Length: 317
Image 1: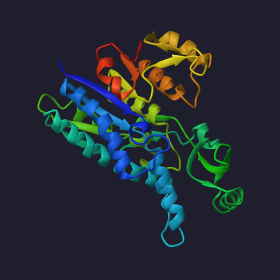
Image 2 (image 1 turned 90 degrees about the vertical axis):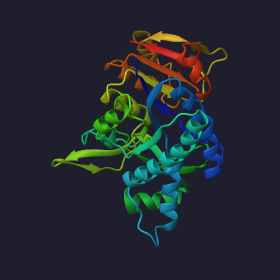
Image 3 (image 1 turned 60 degrees about the vertical axis):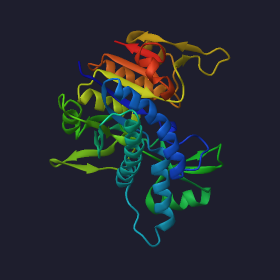
């Protein structure tokens, strides 16, 4: 019987905190993660991979800023598209290597993916997502006057960062193509990389799609992708082996298995802050409320054990 999954790979799988964003560092980290993904594929799974793009799109925006006096800057949706191609290519390289080592013949295919958002989403009125380089107070004030950008202070780094809108995803333009690639029958041989960095945000306008200056949460976009292609298993790989209750306390409590109703209750009580596990829990809730059958949250190193039910956090309807 065909086994499939949508697997969302966290940003730490590409670049660890504090690391320089060199190609060598990113490829080393991706090879570690792709080793586990290749073993999952060898065991009989076909999959769609999604990924983060925070450091990569940040570097693209910084390059825009440094060269803007001589080269026209690109809008944010184009920068997200650039980062999708960049990270997708690196995943193609690393996963193709890992599959070859496992004697698996698959083609890794990257789909440049647009995610639909509502033009009237209230998120457009309240920019909250920090992106790009750090600015001094004077630079931030100048950019705000010249370009209408919004900024927030970053107390840890002692500077200011631009914030952009983060509307909720409501659809995936390329979902039909992605579904055909994943569920193409016994002879298909594609591993699909899609919706990188939350997808390229677009709105419907006059019968077509238009890119907008926004960043979509990658976990929510991955959940919408999984729902759109009618996937039943959604896996989120992150830097912890399990989801924890009371994570910041002296005695955090790991969650091995939990029902959707109990997870919602804990989420509503504030157990999962927005700056850590909150978006993943919200994505899990969305997926299970829209036809999904199981969510697994774990680290790449525990992926194989989690698929056997021996590790990770398992969330059921």
